[in-house]
Length: 319
Image (cartoon, rainbow, N blue to C red; front, side):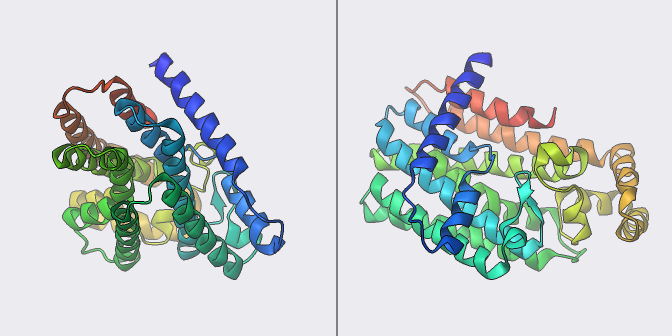
């Protein structure tokens, strides 16, 4: 794993350098200064790193892969800027969110511009209309996931199945794209492309469930945002759904107390641990990670060590 960590940090550094090289005009400063602020953030760069690792596995050209990586990172940041507006989150990657540091109209424009730059970079990666169509279809699926996330707020009837469908769209679709796009571009068989897409989608579902857990059990510094904000806003997470299944009356009593007194986060943690909800959520995340690993077993004649290590790296986030 140490060798993989070195590779991970090396790729992350190269992605950050190329993000810094992205040509942005000086004016209007009201647009481009916030864009620079966003892309200089301390993000993990998991998505562009995933593209690089699949590129290495399929022996794709480095420069071309970097263009796709930058496109995906810009797209991801676009979704974060707009997501912070919709969720009214004040912190992102340990910094003040764009809509708080500037204002909401600025943040909307910044997100729109980031998506446009993502399109430009993806066109550099491939001028194939199918690639651009897949890129835009992925964006539509992400929007569908975000819409469902908003629709589900304060709706205590949402089931596990509905939640899983939502997170596959919101988180799994982009990781599926990152996993398959190089294979599609170099013309590998459709069966491999589909398997890689399934790998990324399962990875994304496990990753989002991890995020639900970390949003309660991590710390604000590691998460780069305040803890408990999802629960305060009434979002449906795997933890809230499992908590209702375990003891609906007690959970709602604790939740109402928390909404009145934010310092009661410890009470929520205690309930989720003692009731077994946290462990159940971790088991569900691990089920999706196992499905992702099974997808990799179906890929033959390629060295999958680095991609398997990437999966292990993601799984270790909650430990």
